[in-house]
Amino acid sequence: MNRKFHADRRFFLATASIGLAAGASSAWAAGAVLPAPQSLADELGRALEKGNPLVVMVSLEGCPFCKVARDSYLEPLRRQDGMPVFQIDMRRATTVRDFTGATLTHEQLVQAWRVTIAPTVLFFGPSGKEIVARMEGGYIADFYGAYLDQRIEQARAVIKSAKP
Image 1: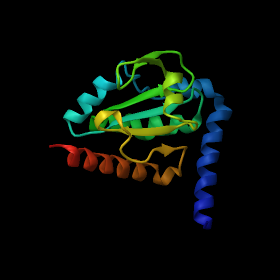
Image 2: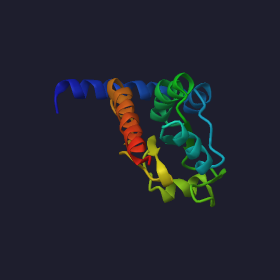
Image 3: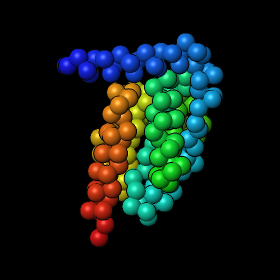
Image 4: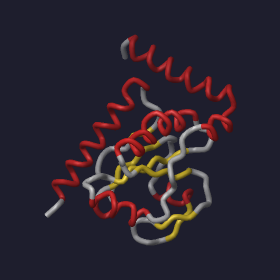
């Protein structure tokens, strides 16, 4: 790996560490809030009608990397572009209906999806299937937006090619 990569990574980790030092709970509360879905199937249907994937961020309360992803990339994507972006919390007992209509807690859903890293951003398409590679972890701050945009464009292309 080159020096620029290491310098960028150290900057990103230092920025996240500052958030931890400032107090994770206050950092969590002060940031953007993504809605939790009531029904993944319903939200997916609305997303697909517009040619978009359903974007779901799996987060962990107090996670500084989650805060950066949510505040700087996912909430603006939702607010400005109308992208269907939702949040599932790794340890929350709140229930949600999955793509089959079954009721699961957020924690059970995260286990079913085999998510072990926060944040993880998933991109769902027809039949509730993941249609492009997940984004796991914090990535390098300078490239996170580009990777996110790339995944969304790839997902839209998959959805477009799946239409009859």
